[in-house]
Length: 409
Ligand code: NAD
Image 1: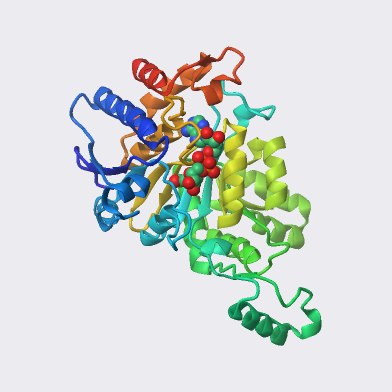
Image 2: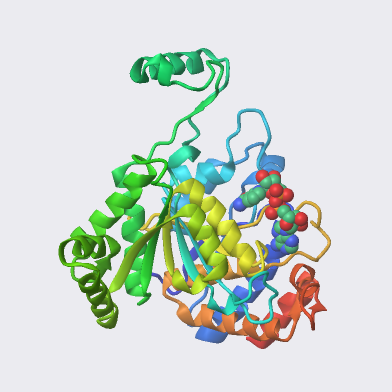
């Protein structure tokens, strides 16, 4: 990206705890930018509306001006939005992702020393999830049980498979799981490029290809083919390992894998999703960059976040690497149960901002903020969601935590 010294960045404050965590994050961003660049660089924040705040203001949940601002300025940042219930209004987050075709949901997962974790070796957790954001069972193609469409679909399946093989009742509801070569390839390509750029050891394709052979199995197969075709000299795939094993025996395959690792090649491997979820608890060090489909990615993201402190601290972004559009966002919801209490953890939004500054190439900002947060968590200084589990925890309000980060920059 070519970034001016004073970029305009649209932001959506968000509903519920949104206003509190945005005020916190913005104050920290501005202090860190000032510290890093002494006035040479500066973000011009531009508020755009969405969600409840927008609806109360102008009757629209997601006004065109908001969408146009994200289109024009390429990047943006947002707090959580209340999803309107009923009335045929789709999820605002889904609308933003679809409109800008933000096909990667990027979730880095790392542990901060001092934060309590349910696993034995959280220091070994360092993963980056690339979740496909536009396809899979989340495409929203479903037919209600008893509807004319569902009956027609049942008819179609019965004709295709032969009535005897259809083992579910006629009154079933149906959902469609579209998975395309193009959609899978652009996601996996982005994951491999990211791993190569950041000199990471492996990309793991997480799938359920053992059960869903053409969709999830396709994802795995296309991933291996793409890796070997487009990144020939930079990667070693476990598919190549299997080929060698068949042709020259296990020892030769093991030798080739060892040589590939020694020469710094990126290892591309795959794992079945359920095994992956278990393995990450037992041997998180085996995984680095993860590429997976939409539904798996949803489950995987939450489990991995829980391993390092939960949604209050897990950042995320939705990105289209082809157009450059990216929206950085807190991964949690509006937390209505604690809104207005000055107790929400702003870390998820702050760390999403760190991702945003890295995306802009303003690495110094992220380094300052991350180092400050590392110091605070090590001292047990945190908001209640984290501090209450820390042996030496000192509970801070959102405002106190914000001031503490700023004073540690
Ligand atoms: P939630 O994430 O808002 O809350 C789940 C639990 O986590 C609550 O106990 C809450 O207090 C706690 N929590 C969440 N964020 C926290 C933070 N920053 N600090 C401390 N504790 C925090 O999920 P929910 O209750 O299922 O959803 C509430 C609303 O948020 C719904 O309208 C939902 O649609 C929306 N939502 C929006 C997004 C988004 O905009 N990206 C994501 C999820 C949910």
